[in-house]
Structures are given as structure tokens and as C-alpha cells.
Image 1 (cartoon, rainbow, N blue to C red):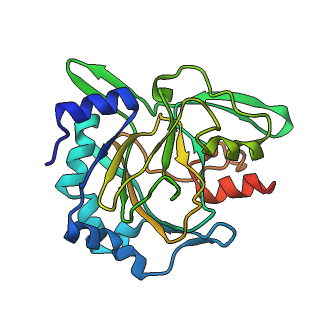
Image 2: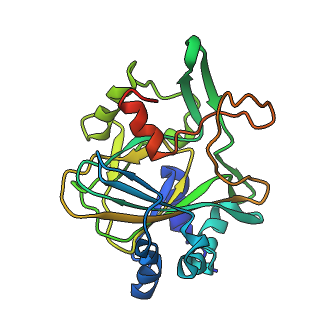
Image 3: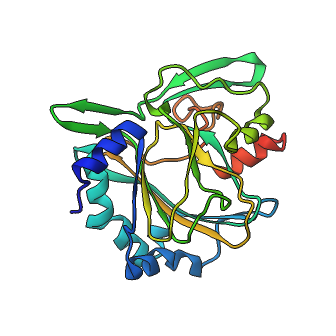
Length: 264
């Protein structure tokens, strides 16, 4: 397996992510792009975002990649216990696409009827006896170059260690203003080249800034966690069934855009 180096582990611990330059060679890039051969599962015409759900179940090349030693070795370096694949998806987005800032640690939410809740999930990274123990890590493989105007990955510096929820604007619609370098003094962006991979601690407050350049932005993402973690799936807060009720997880592009348009 391909383990992260001590320098890469230090960067991951300090930043909440680490960028692995040139992680995918030409054959691996071709394998990762194979999901584009089929129709997407979701399409948002207003932003040009297309999403493929679980491409590893339909494309053997993708499955071999996300379950192979390079991806799982990098994940194991920061999980350090028996792991499993929690989710896998592919993206293609064009001009105007973006992703709201979100994270899996401290998040303040306002529900119907004025119910307010600050949830603190176990998407975190602990340290013990020289090892990091992350409960939800995502590998984002970039299949095209993403420059400063191409909708790069962005994050709030230090937020993976924050114990207080981020001070969101009152209106959800205003969150889009955060996705610019002037939106918040601690916002950082990470341009990448095709073949680069970002190893992300999901506790980090992150998103994708607004894409203002032309051409596609394509990525393949795979999330891992300890074997006791369940698969990622959307949950309804009030399904009428106490066995399946949960918090709606906002790590989903469709719900983000519906919310922004006043439909969520």
C-alpha cells in the first residue's frame, strides 16, 4: 500500500487536508475517467453540474482504483484501523458551478418551526501514540486542471479543529458570497492539476468556489472510514419512522442548490 510520508501526515494534521501532486499517472487517469462513458445520475442545468453515483459499482476500472493499494493506502495512513469504502461519486461541472461550504464536525442548523441545533459529529481526527485516527476521510482525484478561476477546492483555515460552529450569515443564500477570496479572511483555495489528489478530513469546513472559466471540471471522489462506519446515504429528519430518522446531511449538491433557490 502507498502510505503518506511524515511530511504529508504533518500537513494533513495541520491543515485538515493534504494535496498529493501527480498521484495518478496516465493509466490511472484513464481508469478514473471511465465513469464518463455512461449517463449521469443527476443533472443541474442551472449550473451545468453532472453527478454519477457509485461509479465503482458499474465500472470495474473505477472499482479497481478506489479499492486498490494507492487509494486505500493513503486513507489507511490517517485512519489506522480496519477501513471500508463509505461512498464513491464522480462530478463534471462547467461555468457557474459551485459547492456551498460544509463540514462534518461542528455545524449550526435551523430547522422548521424554529428548531435550532448545533450538531457535533464524529467526523474528526484524533491522535494517539504517534498515529492519526480519522473517522471520515475523502480522497478527491482531479481528472482535469482546476486553476484559480476553475472552481477550486476551498476551505476555512483551521476549521477541522474548531469547537464552535462557523458564524454563518443569517440567510442561506448569502453563503455563496463566502466562496470568494474576499468572502472570509480565513478562506483558502487550492488549485490543482489533472492527476492530483486531495486527502480531506471531512471535519474541515470546505466547498468549491464559483467556476468562472469555461471547459469541464471533472473529479472522482471516494470516502473511507473505520469498518464500524456506515455507508453515506441521505437521511430524512422526519420520515415518520424512528428507526430511520436522522439529520439531513448537506454534503449533497442537489440539496445545496435547492436550498439556495428557496426550494429546500
